[in-house]
Every structure is written in C-alpha cells, then in structure tokens.
Image (cartoon, rainbow, N blue to C red; front, side, top):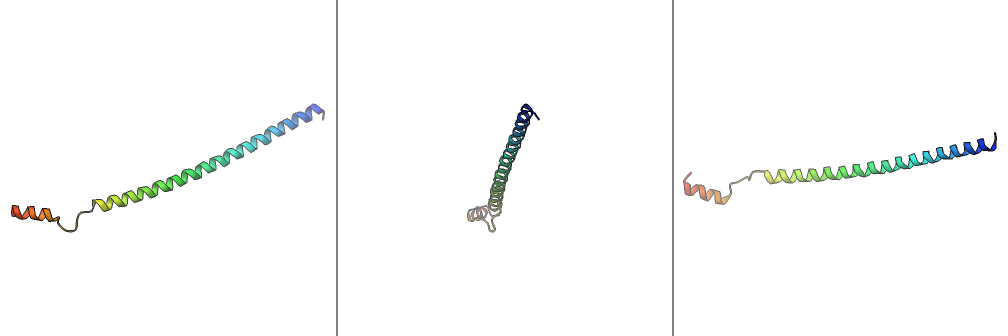
Length: 78
C-alpha cells in the first residue's frame, strides 16, 4: 500500500472511532436524561397520591350534625 492509501485508511479509521465514541456519549446522555425523567415522574405520582388522599379526607361528610345546624332545625321545628 502506498503512503497515500495508508493515510486515507488511517483517517477513515479515526473518523469511524470518533463517530462511535460520540454515539456512545450521546447514548449515555440520553440514558441519564431518561433516568432523570423517570425520577421526576415518580415524584409527581407521589405528589398526586398525596393530593388525592387530602381531597378524599376533606370531602368526607361529618359523622354528626354540626351544632349550629341542629339549633337552626330546632328553631324551625323540623
């Protein structure tokens, strides 16, 4: 092989190696981003569960009548 062919082969090999390492770096970056998004999703699900529990607790009917309502009903003689 001539010197020009060896140089060309070396350049092509170098370009291939750089492209491969860049693709791996992008893949690692994408994996990290996916992991961060999954963590955000878990936190949002936990917050949603907490809000749903609070809403359920706040919307329950009282177990006994409110005293002011009882007095009002007595005045109305119901």
